[in-house]
Every structure is written in structure tokens, then in C-alpha cells.
Amino acid sequence: EYIEGADVGVILTDASCENHRLSLPNKLFQYLAGGLPVVVSDLPEMAALVGRLGVGTSVDRDSPSAIAAAIARLARPGEAREADIGVAGGTGVGILFKKGKVVKKFPEDRLVEVVLEAVDEFDAQTSSR
Image (tube, rainbow, N blue to C red; front, side, top):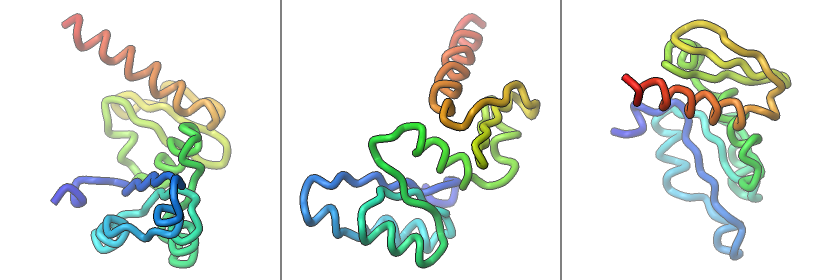
């Protein structure tokens, strides 16, 4: 049920043991069965499966900007534009939307920073109402 409302499935397993490094978690297959693109840790088995099937991307789980950029690239087209705060990224450029309007373009490696600033600003505006 929660998968139906999601845009992207994210699995950021750590490599703390051999079992984790070689795992293919059930939730990966649940996301795929639900038609979601996925962002997974760059661990051997998950990365290989996702790459072979072409259903998402693998990232360094310790890189927030890589994770954010991957999610932004895989989110369904149009989702970001319609949100109170939305972000899209790809080809080195990020775009911040607010209620359907482009408000900022920025280097994709600043994605996390820009989104956090926008969320803080949104929180300040909504809490002062």
C-alpha cells in the first residue's frame, strides 16, 4: 500500500558484514513489483541487479548529495513541479520548484544544501501563519 504512493524506492544498506554486502533484500523486489524505480547502495549484488534490469541506480550510501541527485533523477516527471517544494536534477544541474514555478537553478552537487534551505524557509513561513 505504501509503495503505491511512492515515487522512488530507496535501499541504503551498509557494508558492515558479508551478509549485507551480498544481500538482495525482499523490499527491492517489492519495489520492483510495484513498478518503482530504485536507488540502492553500491553493493555488488544490488548494484548488479539494478544495473542489469535498468530499473534505477546505485549510489554511495555515505554521499547525501549523490542520494538526493539520484532520487531527483528517478522521481516521476512532473512530481516536483506540483509540490509546495520540489526538486529535479540531472546532467549536472538541479532545479528548485515552489508551487509549480522554477525559483532556482544550481549545480547538482548542491542539491541537499538547497533542499534543506528551502525546507527551513517553508517551515518558517508556515509556522508564522
